[in-house]
Image (cartoon, rainbow, N blue to C red; front, side, top):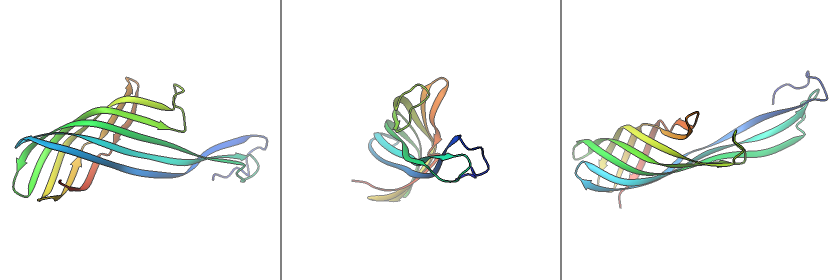
Amino acid sequence: VGNYQDRPSGTIYHEKQNYRYIPHIFAEYNRQLRPWLWAGAQVDFGGFSWDSVSIPGGTNTITESSSENCYNISILPSLRFDWFRTEYLKMYSALRIGIDINTGSETDMFGKKTVVAPCFTPAVLGITAGKGNIFGNLEIGGLYALRNKNLVYMFGSRLISASISFRF
């Protein structure tokens, strides 16, 4: 909480505090079409929440508090191109294009609580290490969702992704 004790009384100040983040959680399924080409889909979830508080000037006492949130769910069909393969290591690039659903307790500048927008996830460099059913992935790319030409949600979110995977 900021110091509102020295501010004029009669004015109510609003502040956001105590941010809590939910890291990106995703599930992905891929099917190998060629030794170098995979097709699949990914579902990604992430978000954050915070407390919105009201504090009257002349005090540091919170008079109102509410929990707010914002969540993103992305559904992304994908293509992955392996450009280096050995028995234990693969290097690849991928492109996922789909939709992003941005929702939460706040409204955006257009008065909407839920916005569906096109999104894409380029993986400039992906590395898969392991053999058999269990392996690890490291991916450099990002998640970008476009509302319109002036507004971008999730710009550059998930720039680096690390995961442990299981192959069924």
